[in-house]
Image (cartoon, rainbow, N blue to C red; front, side, top):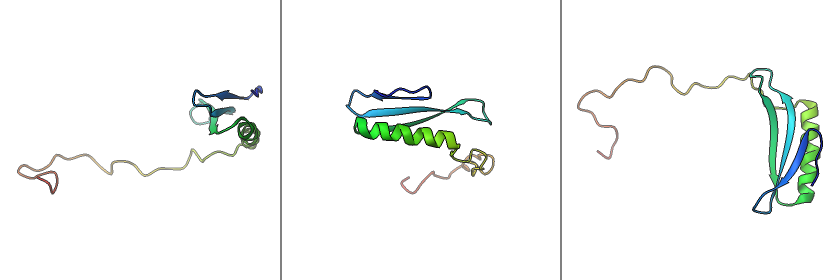
Amino acid sequence: MVNTVRGHIEQLPSGSFRVHVYAGTDPVTGRPRRLRETCPDEAAAAATLGRLLTEADGGRFPNRAATRRPRHHGPVEPWPPGTTAGPLS
C-alpha cells in the first residue's frame, strides 16, 4: 500500500481500495478537511492518491461560503381542523 504524510490507501473487505487525503483545516468550522475516494484496484487508487494530493495542494474545494436555500420558508403551521393530509384519505 502507498502511504504519504498527508494520505494513504486502504484495502476494503470487498477488495476495493479507499484513498484518504488530509487537505488542511476548514477556515469556517476549524475542522480538518479530508478527501476520500474509492477505487476498484490498487493502480487506480495510486493514481487517485496523486490526483487528490494535487487537489489538496491547489486548495480546490467546493465553495463553503455559498448560501443554500433554507429547508423551511417560514414557521410550520398545523393542518386546519377537518382537512386531510393528502389525496389518499
